[in-house]
Length: 312
Image 1 (cartoon, helix red, strand yellow):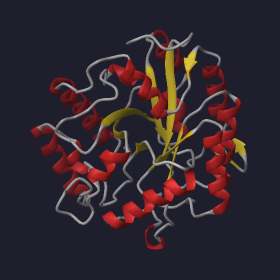
Image 2 (cartoon, rainbow, N blue to C red; image 1 turned 30 degrees about the vertical axis):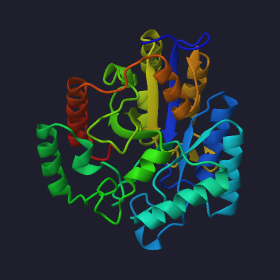
Image 3 (spheres, one colour; image 1 turned 180 degrees about the vertical axis):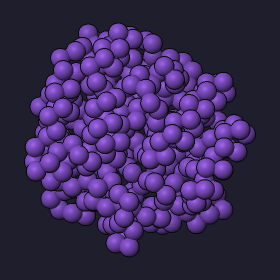
């Protein structure tokens, strides 16, 4: 691992999935992050919710909510990154995606640089079995998808009305694929971020550490894991939902706050996802992932996914 800028010896950041996010439940969390010196990435939906599809986490505030928009704009002014989680909580055809991206740009002054697919949106790019490169991985994924009745994903399929792969390539720099049960993602994905030539509509992929809710997040960044991350000079990009138990009644979870305070006292690089990935690209000349590394990453993710289906 190449050295970090300044006195930093490791890196830590967070990608916050916007599912269920409101000003009331995530506002206190971002105040805590800001006060402790962390600058992370918060995703948003530019378009209003599709009311018929607000179950299973597909709810929350959007950029059409005035006070929430002000909150998001304030976060960006403070140095947080605002990213995309699809343009809304439901399937979007190409014209809807274009409209959503334009609203994002109109509200924030630029297009998003980082994106993650939302759950079962049909416009997801390279999702479902499309996430996998190896024949064995795709076969396992098809079996899992069959029993879970996973919908088709066509954001990368040029013949589909849901295709927006070329738009993704034009505007989005980084897309998240796998999440792993490991705090230091470079242990399982040293080529971070990486390009996969088999998925040409994504410029660079990144891998995240799983921590979907406050309990799993705190377990992932416990004291021993923090110390190991520091000792290894590693990189942690947590993937979470700050809407899921991180604050109650305006009070931030005490265990979460204590762990962040401890982490903030270490010599870490605490910048948003895109800024961290930009830096990592300056430390190497090769961005294409080797098949062996990708196959190993897929196997690890599949094993974890089978044990914990809710993982992303």
